[in-house]
Image 1 (cartoon, rainbow, N blue to C red):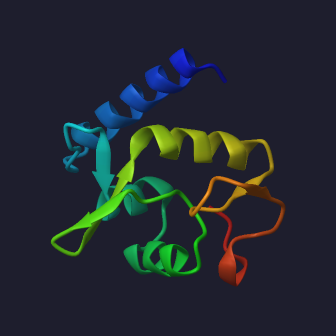
Image 2: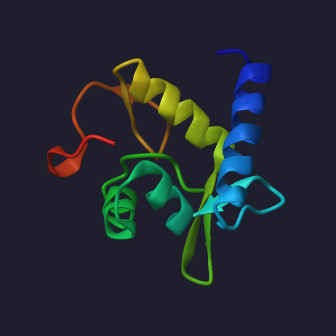
Length: 104
């Protein structure tokens, strides 16, 4: 996927999050609650993934709320669709299921 395609995909995801009432920052980051709802998992699962350095990379935590860059989320989702898992800490691809056997 080209950078332009990723940017368009990120913008579309941001609009989807906003239309569902989730917070999207000016830096195009979504809060954990929005991402969890989007992926159909619990916020606890996202916390566990962050602790195990799995799943979409989070950029920072503000007032104990993790924020996820939507562009990184788009890359992560593309990798998942291609059958690769991506480590949150460095974007390196690996081929194994999510911690606990959960597939996003």
